[in-house]
Image 1 (cartoon, rainbow, N blue to C red):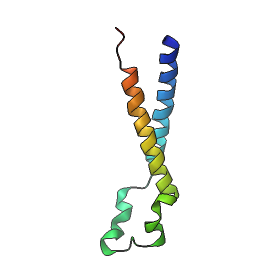
Image 2: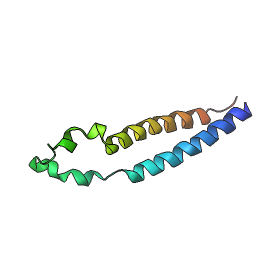
Image 3: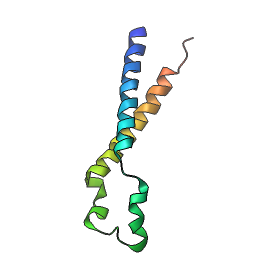
Image 4: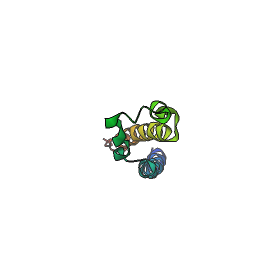
Length: 79
């Protein structure tokens, strides 16, 4: 059982580092201020999910879910 806990801790550290790097790679939301004047209706605005930024957002969501699940599993007390 201790081996599984050690393995989960290592995976948790890798997920934490990956999540940190991905968040730092993303653009800020202030870059989209052109949406007020309608400038976001360009090709890149419509297809943001297929761009690199959209991919980073998707991967960040999955890593955040993995972070929460692994953190919950590691915090289960042994009785």
